[in-house]
Amino acid sequence: MENVIVGIADFKIVKAPNQIMTVGLGSCCGVVLYDETSKIAGLVHVLLSDSKFEKNVVNKAKYADSGINLLYQEMIRAGANTRFIRAKLAGGAHMFNFKNTGNSIFTIGERNVKACKETLAKLKISIVSEDVLGTCGRTIVFDTTTSKLRIKSVGKSDKYI
Image (tube, rainbow, N blue to C red):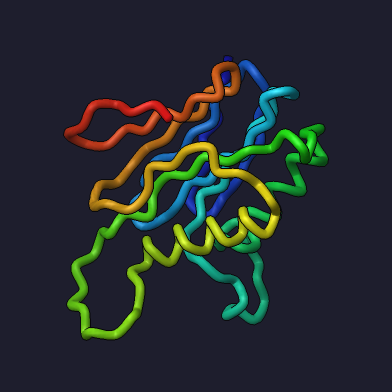
């Protein structure tokens, strides 16, 4: 079994029995797509919510909208069945203390979570479980054999979703 590491603004795909993980999810989101029937899983470490404000997107994995779409297409190319692809989501913490000026501006983490959920909804991918928002950073590890996502946060017990 190999433990494949996904960096910031990166994505990778694995097959059972391998695991896939990412560290340093603060306001970033980790989106896991998996197909339990084919035992194929992918993870994208989303840094920002929306690619449409960048003129020439060089790294699609950096953004929720383009990164999740890229991961989805690559999962299909690797043999995943669109009918069985599900999602698990973690991250989007409030890591910076900005004063609220009374307007409706979201924090970076909240915007990332919202964009991830909107993109998954457009692709008609169900979110099976999530561990989002809050104020703690996370490391996540997805096990392709059990379809469990382990969430590690400093000072907390590991959580499995």
